[in-house]
Length: 120
Image (cartoon, rainbow, N blue to C red):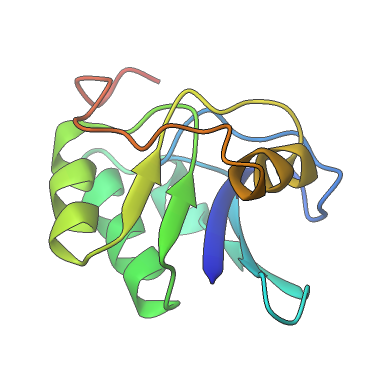
């Protein structure tokens, strides 16, 4: 399974970024190979609008099957869901801790957006 985690830093020990659309970067973790790659999200950090939709497109193109993040706005949630990507919000800690909690079945899949967008 390919997992996207919103991250403030470039490693599995980095703290998660609580934002989805304006996350500093995404870490794409491959559960099968245990490898990861960093996907920078700099183009959306200061976007006037559309950051969530653009971030959803980046995540979808990367082949992610699920997203672990703190918050996800309605447009991004709709785009991710339409692409068949599961979303888990309210996740915190480090990237590695979030992945471990997903593997352990400790995270609940989000049923709707949990922010109105532009909140962060």
